[in-house]
Length: 317
Image (cartoon, rainbow, N blue to C red; front, side, top):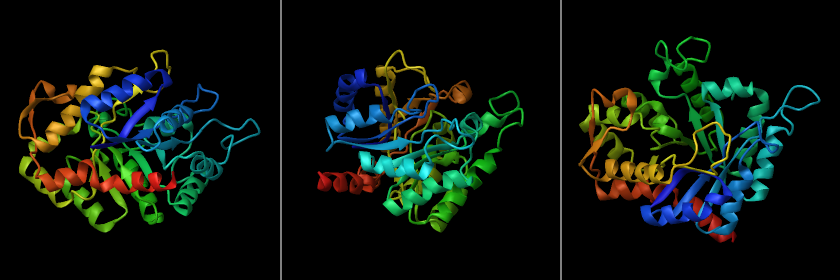
């Protein structure tokens, strides 16, 4: 089983991380870095490289861009195109783009359509580097009183449109839209996207929100995952940080990481009832049903769709 969306950002967590990989049956993993303006480097790329170098046949990495501003004026310290080339030289397989998340775009003061960021996409396409792209957030975050409910952030639709604009503009890049593109409640739209854009893939990193959305339209969800099993990849979004890390997300919890990985696997390949992990819907829908996909679909999603990235890395070694 391959986890294509796993955050490793703490060297001191390496041994427990490897242990959890064994416990959960993860043979390989794509490690996703994070940006953090409070760090001198602006990212956790060095931590991801540490893990990759410890076991280069097992792990590949997606580097984050450094969004720290240049002291000389506008723009980043290092042009984004140069950053991507450096990531490639350092041994990263791909790039993680966070700017589709409204909160992050506001914090970093740059958007994916900006010419400076477009240089990063151009470099990634020239180098054959895939991109894991976070677009939007759970749709209910835009409800009144929620994170984006005051109207000062990009709308949900704008986040989706920006991501699709990038995928259309750079057809040579494999785009992996995280969290099912936050469109688990709109499978018809997702189908249109996948049919029209052959370079777009989806990952199953849920952020806990999408289980009820898929269970609500259970038969349709099973059909969608089966028909598009070659365009969906397994990702957990599990987190591994040192305890003292001051980052954009919560600290590490090994048992929660195990539960997260196991929950998604069970949801995909069994029909058992699972506890609904999303607080916003848990009271009304305390349990969710697994999709119980067929073996071929499971093999595609959990391994075959991304094997080529690891095989390529092994040949380079």
